[in-house]
Image (cartoon, rainbow, N blue to C red; front, side, top):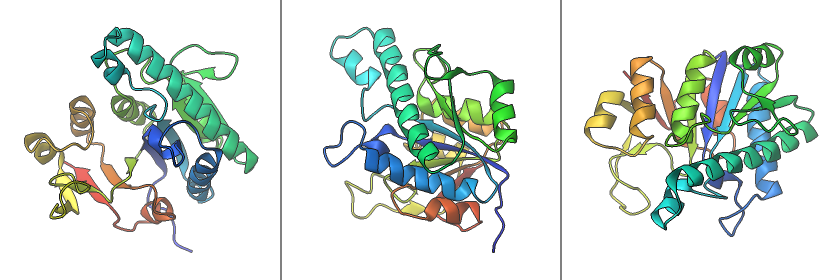
Length: 238
């Protein structure tokens, strides 16, 4: 059996991965499928941190565009990430995969507070750590939260699971002639204004020399194959 090429990873997913056929809400079957993917790499002995967005439930920026106060919208989005996190935690624990949810917002009845040393301790004990509540501050996306936590928790790589097969020169869902990059630099992402992550997240990756791999989370088994060293999706690095 092959050995994993990473000791610790931070998996970043959009909330849409939990949505069912209607494209909204939390589908328990989707949560179960995601939990299977996560468990497959935890079973390899890889430390797993996980951050899930809130797009299946609420988008603060979109609500702000319709008149809601941006800060209010962002906090509602953070609360939605906690709902997603608890759903995935439940699915993982049904598979006997020990999991802890740590939140940047205090919701002590359902999640532990995010404390870096506590999160590291859980990882060292082999638990999957789901980090919810974003950074705990408005105006920061879950992309930025993912890179920040990956840096704090000493992850080897950020794995961003999307609904496309990597980074393209333009939207592959709109343009049939879109070209996929196998590798690209953070500088090129910034210069070409490619929609990989928000600018703050990309800059954090660049400054901390933290590699990012973008792949299609909906392709069963690809997460495990990446952890085992296969060149899937797009690698973004300095």
